[in-house]
Image (cartoon, rainbow, N blue to C red; front, side):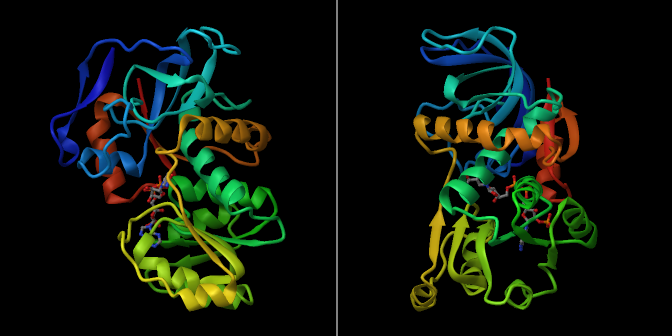
Amino acid sequence: MRAVHAEGTGGPEVLSVREVPDVQPGPGEVAIEVVATAVNRADTLQRQGLYPPPPGASDVIGLECSGRIASLGEGVEGWSVGDEVCALLAGGGYASRVVVPAGQVMPVPDGIDLVSAAALPEVACTVWSNVYMVAGLRPDETFLVHGGAGGIGTFAIQLVSALGSRVLTTGGTPEKRAFCADLGAAVTIDYREEDFVEVAQREEAGGVDVILDNMGAAYLGRNVKALATEGRLVIIGMQGGIKGELNIAALLNKRAAVIATSLRGRPEAGKAAICAAVVEHVWPLVAAGAVRPIIDRVLPLEEVAEAHRVMGEGSHTGKILLTL
Ligand SMILES: NC(=O)c1ccc[n+]([C@@H]2O[C@H](COP(=O)([O-])OP(=O)(O)OC[C@H]3O[C@@H](n4cnc5c(N)ncnc54)[C@H](OP(=O)(O)O)[C@@H]3O)[C@@H](O)[C@H]2O)c1
């Protein structure tokens, strides 16, 4: 099989495609012949040596894929060889074949082609689990997602709007903010020139109910200020640093919550529960066209270094896919 090899750690140039020994499914696992995979920000951190794979995971980069089932490990039921699927991975996606616990394999939503399906597992599982399972957003509540034009942001805007909540988002260029508005964001904020706290408080008297944050330390204080009474801040990224100062009095007065989560490090059973919830609650909205995969570009796996360069530069809107 072919897989992306990282020659040490460093810039995108350390990545290249090589022949490697085939992987075989163990008990409870499924082997997938990969048709497409997607680039995640975490992949660029892993390449730099800043985000090692969890114990037991493949050291090949890649957190999601789409493809066809190639073989089934002992005890796997409900899937057949040849089924078209997409999957949430702990690693190994940048390869022509990957093995994954059966609970993390999902059908391709109706109406979605097999390549585009690779754009869905990470964003659908991250947004559904954090916004609905963890933060419990209700349709009558308001929602702010930072970085609305990114992979997570483009999915969150569509899903949360489709489920009835009013969406605010931040974006770095007028083009990206216009794209977010087209996806359903009611309010778009220029994070370079505007104060999102001031805009959120002006637009939503009292602040927003749930914030999905990618910035970590840099936005911690301002996110707490932007929360409404009983608001929930869910931090999923650390693009703005890892250590911040929390104003406990502000949290206490609002009876607000700050939560941080990582999808990759969750136990298998937790990931399986999230995948099952996504298939139940999110796939019907994708099949109905209310939520669609937003794809910036599709490159062959051999151009993995270019794909990482584009993500590092941050000019993309939505997901960057790699095909085999
Ligand atoms: N914890 C988890 O389980 C989990 C799972 C998946 C993803 N994540 C994290 O979620 C974040 C987004 O992932 P992604 O795949 O969507 O990456 P992405 O496509 O590269 O998006 C990154 C976003 O960050 C935005 N951004 C940059 N500087 C900003 C600032 N100062 N204020 C507000 N937004 C800013 C960018 O906005 P512009 O393009 O407008 O500049 C862009 O939309 C990453 O930090 C990733 O690591 C976490």
